[in-house]
Amino acid sequence: MKPDKESARGLAQVEGYLLWNAEVEEARRQARRFTASLPWLTTAQREEVERVYVADRVEVCRETLTRIAGRAVELRGEYTERYDRLRARCVAVSVLTVCTMGGICAALVLISR
Image (cartoon, rainbow, N blue to C red; front, side, top):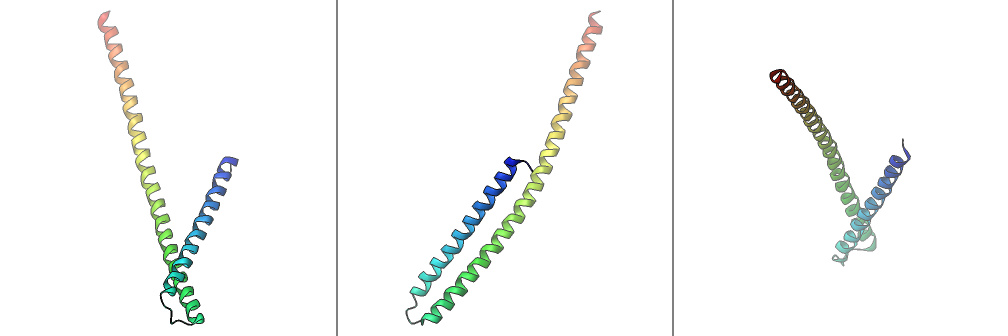
C-alpha cells in the first residue's frame, strides 16, 4: 500500500475510534441524566440501570453503523457501475464524433477534387 493511502487509512481509523468513544461517553452522560431523575434508586440499582442503558445504546449505535456501512458499500457499487457506463458512452460518442468528422473531411476532400 502507498504511504499516502496508509496515512489516510490510519487517520480514518483514529477518527473512527474517537467518534466511537465520544458516542459511548454521550451514552454514559444520558444514562446518568436518566438515573438522576429516579432518586429512589439505590446505588447498585442506579449503576445497573446505567450499565443496561449504555449497553443498549451502544448496541443500537453498532447496528446503525453496520447498516450505514453496508449501504455505503452498495452505493459505491451502484455509482461505480453508473460511472463505468457513462464513461463508456462518452468514449463511444467521442469515437463516433471523430469518425464522423473524419468522414466528412474525407468527403469534402473528394468532392473538392
